[in-house]
Every structure is written in C-alpha cells, then in structure tokens.
Image 1: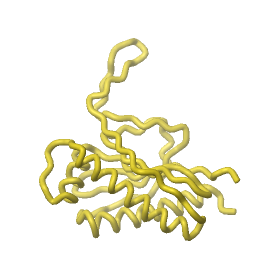
Image 2: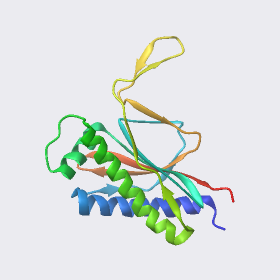
Image 3: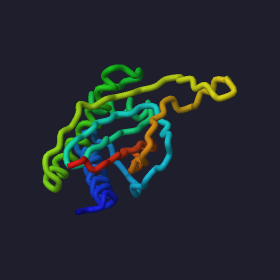
Length: 176
C-alpha cells in the first residue's frame, strides 16, 4: 500500500506533464515549471481559482490558481480574440483548462488506482474583497481571493510569458 505522500508526488508529476502538454499543444503558450512542494499555508491568495474535485480510491481537488491577467491571456489565446474584460468567457476558459488538466490526470490515475469520478469545474473570481480585521478596520489585500484549507496543498508553480500560476492538489485516501 503506497503512502499518501508518494501517491501525491506521483499525481504532482502527472499534473506537471499534463499541464505542460496542454499549454504547449492546445493553448500554444510556452511553460516553465518548478518542483512541486507542500504549501502549508491556511490561506492561498489569488485572483482566480478553477477547481475540479474527484472521488475514487483517493479523493481530493485539483486547483488552478492564477491572476486575472493570466486568465485573460489564456482565454484570449483559446478563443483567438483579444479579451480585455473578465467575462463569463474567461471563466469558462479557466474552467475548461482546469477540467482538461484534471481529465488528463484522471486518465493516468485510473490506470493505477482504479475508477475515478470528476466533478464539473468550479471557477471563482474575486474583486476588491474587503476583509475585516480584529480591530474593525477593513483591510483590502492586493490579491482578491483567499482559499482556506486545513490540509497543505501540493503546489506546482508554472510560469508562462512572465506570468506565474500554480496548479495545486489536495488528496485524501477514501475510506474502504
């Protein structure tokens, strides 16, 4: 029985190769990436999150975390038109990219760990979110959305055309 850490490392390497292939063949953007690492922060700050959850022998979430600027760039490239506004088309593009990464990972995981089911992608985008501090003074962060988790995300950082984004993985072993 593989330790959950080695399963996560395995999946992270699938995420890396799937994301790289997807960006270079379908989105036509060059991609560099770094080593995956556990991000044991309770809060990840970002503008846009595309998430797909999965169930099976293992369950969890694959999340795409990026800036609005990067989301616009990806959507513009995919739709072959210059988008300047963050519209539903941009959300759909982020959802589609998240879905394709998760779908590629699912194919590899199914071969190793048996059947998996994927959720439809959920895309969350934030703007000008106000967070109230203890002393009642509103604090607005430069990044607009926070994602809380009690477990660490296994994050793989990518960079494309000067823009950074992350693909993260939360993973648990399902009860028998």
